[in-house]
Length: 424
Ligand code: GDP
Ligand code: IMO
Ligand code: MG
Image 1: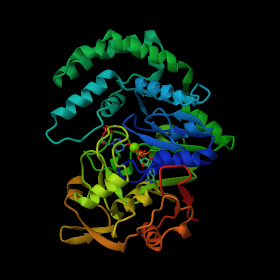
Image 2: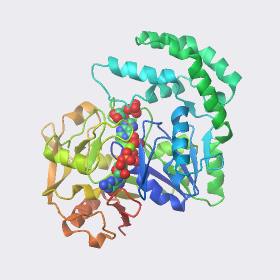
Image 3: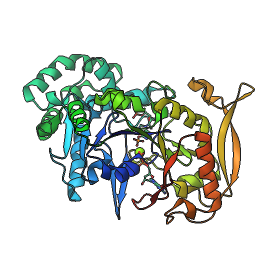
Image 4: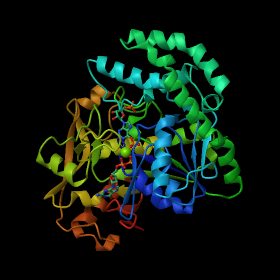
């Protein structure tokens, strides 16, 4: 069985929590895009794990893989492994595989991301982790791959070949080009390359062989659908394709092998960084949701902008991903609101539309049209079954399901593993 899990909104939908929950039935969990711009939180008992690169299946028995479509900061990976090992989670080559072709985020990529963002008059609000610049180099065929990092001679030769151009680019951005050939950084990277050499694998081959043997494989996305570099709200997007089809392309698995595509959908919407968010709440209600939901970035600590559930954006996410089921998260966060609103359409150029216009500028001009439902007061965090939700919460979920036209299979009412139940 091959399942793809993606975020249906702007990221931070609770992918980490749901992947951890479902991973017990999977033999392999693989990350297919993004880098350490991602922050996936998994709460097990009193422990909270913030994962940036390692797939969220790591806390269970699954083998975890990092595919060649990921951009990998080896320093962050080493820190993450050290954090996990401190918690007695073993991460060795039998548990973690990384594709030989995975692009390495070099120190100069991080520098360039920061310089470019600082120079922009209209910011994107990137995580400044060098993600975009690592992907630029992949497409320009100027990337350093993990297999090169793990081999001293090849790494040094590759750097020698790339350095003059990188130095020019950094200087042009107003930075200090010395970072490109910084000996300490080079030695540190080489050490890291040595450390991960034993993890090198062919991810596509592993996954296809596992599927052939009847095993279960899950692909875990980072970011969210509307941050997709092709179909998102350009220019306010990340630099990789975040939708389900990208899992096939990036992991090297044919689309005919996909069995399920699971959406992670927050019961409201959040966004970190700039870009349109038609239902954004800049009032007390927005603050209340931000506080109740702990809506502060896992990676950068920035406050997440919060808004009401946006159905047009969700409909587009359903179209882009072909979802077969939905996991609805953070329903508990809406407790205590007198009214809960669902944005069912937008007022745009004098008309009401139920699907987002394609261009970011047009989405920015959309005014939400709302359907209002009565809220609920009861604490949901201990609820174990749909029938036990307060009537108004059930009405909200049922209405969302009806409007989305895709079954809601899981409902999450808190960050813990036990705080999730199946709807049907
Ligand atoms: P991801 O990037 O999609 O994995 O999401 P993040 O981990 O960045 O953000 C989701 C946050 O919400 C984390 O702090 C989770 O522990 C938390 N969370 C997940 N599901 C729920 C839920 O149902 N209720 C509440 N209150 N918190 C949740
Ligand atoms: P997870 O996997 C939310 C956003 C950044 C910025 C834009 C581009 O935890 O859901 P980048 O550094 O990728 O070039 O920044 O994308 N962004 C995310 N927002 N969750 C994420 O990941 C994100 N990863 C990137 O805030 O607006
Ligand atoms: Mg996150």
